[in-house]
Image 1 (tube, rainbow, N blue to C red):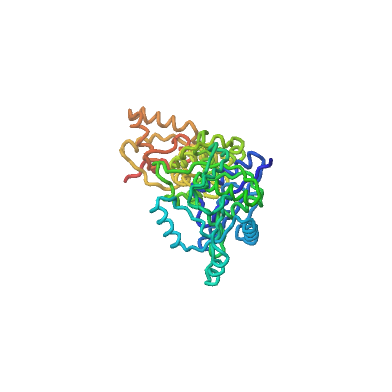
Image 2 (tube, rainbow, N blue to C red):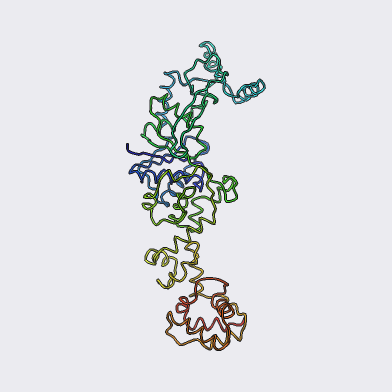
Length: 455
């Protein structure tokens, strides 16, 4: 069987660390099995869906390298949903209900007071033709519910166990008792189809074979399997991964605005670092950068995805990004450095890449090498002696060793007492790249001027 998967975000906000994970898992599953990856915008929420969010989703996926093979918008398929609804009505599985939100709230409270489960009592199924005509004459518009089972509705509040089972590709054998659930609303009073309904119709029409999504949809799966069958279709396979939590173990949801994919891009993260982290977090694989999407796909297996909550730590993502940069040869980054106005060639890149969190950090080290800084002079006499002992140019990789040996012999300084004052004077910083490869890039005149600066 060929594989077809989909990522179906609602364009009501930005993609973030939490909801990019199912996109990545679906994409890699498709590539690992030679299948197709579909981007489907679930945009039937007219009030919250925005074109700018839809554009942002496409931009973020493109930046990450998650190229979709097929594309659809639910807002283009409203006629199709109407046809599917008509088929459900004809089979007796979709029925009209006229209660308002206040009516339903009062019913739930009465049921709880009587010790009954607070599920919908299926009053809509018991409306007579005369009652229906009267409601319509009053201008009342119904919402429409899916009848979850084929039992007679005479005693709707009596527990009616109806177990739906499936083998989850991540969580193993799963069971949902849909008898403990209210018949779900599929269509609102204003005629707008809801997510549960539109998703199933789309998954049928587009031949989706596998649905990979968060564990918050497990209960939805029992309902959706019923809907697949009510529409005469075989349900696809399901896989429900765990949700992300923060490094502190708390829910990630309140911090998602600061963890958007566009925010990562603007901060300067590499797309393969973000992609690698999203693919490997919460799996049995080590979280480390992969060079290409193809490399990630080759090692992808849903069996590696843990059911335990996955911890998202921004510091870990930064570490992955830093390791990715450290592994990049100069040829892979040369054009980007040149566009940033950074020179120094391969010698500069090799010297500083181990000290970068994001590529933009290279700017500050190029400023140290070729710009103006404020030297820090701890001991003017020591700095003056170091300047006096500077060897003549040209300088190369041996200059640093010869120069520091001469300073040590002249002053007796060694270890930190020798190297730290030189670092402060030449870079203005306590830490940073090794000075041995940076020294020839700075040049004798600049080094001498910094050593002789009197604060």
